[in-house]
Structures are given as C-alpha cells and as structure tokens.
Image (cartoon, rainbow, N blue to C red; front, side, top):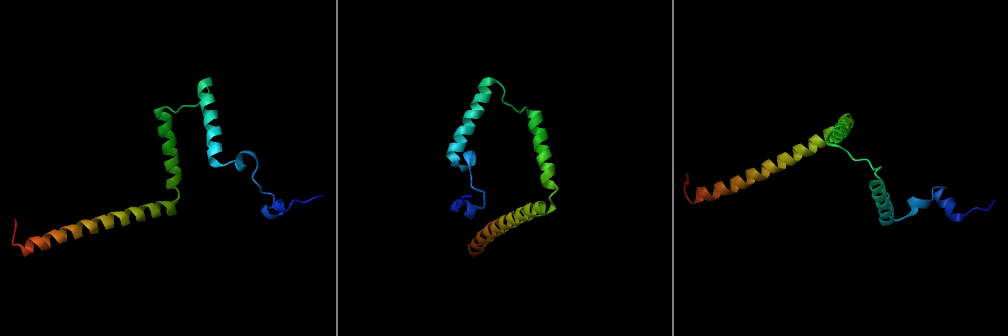
Amino acid sequence: MASNASNDKTKGTAKRGFAAMDEATQRAIASKGGQAAHQKGTAHEFDSEEARRAGQKGGEAVSRDREHMAAIGRKGGESRQSAARAAAEKNRGGSEQSSKGGNKQ
C-alpha cells in the first residue's frame, strides 16, 4: 500500500472539503445557505421569548462553572479597584493644588 508523506506527518487529520477552505470562502458559502433558507421560508427566526429562554439557559450553564465565575468576579473587582484608585488619585491631585492656593470651600 502506498503511503503519502504528508499523511504520515498529520496522522490522518488532513483537512478536507469545507474545513480545508479559508474562512472567507466558508463565510460566503454559509451566507448563501442562510439567504436561501430565508427566501424559501424555512429559516428559523427567534421571537423575544425564545431568545430570552436561550440566554437564560446559557447563563445557567456558565454559572455552574465556579472557577469561571470566580475569575469574572475577580476581574470585575480588580477593575473597580483600579477605577477607585484613579478617582482617589485625581481627587488627591486637585486637593493639593487647592491647599497651596488657600482654602477654596
């Protein structure tokens, strides 16, 4: 049996068909499929209630991952803390100028 050298390197995982196409070509083909479905009338369109349920379901799935939620909370805390520090620094800078020029209250 003949063996292709490139298949030996990729161990049988060479991309074929749609997967081998560049992203722009894939998007163009997918777009045409979506347009055809809308023209045919078979495309699925979310109503607001269905979209709400989908978002809720996704949120529940994400919130089960405690590590991920902790990382989100930590990032928010860090952001809030840095914003508070920046505001305090800004206020400190302004109060030093007013103390040099006298009491402006």
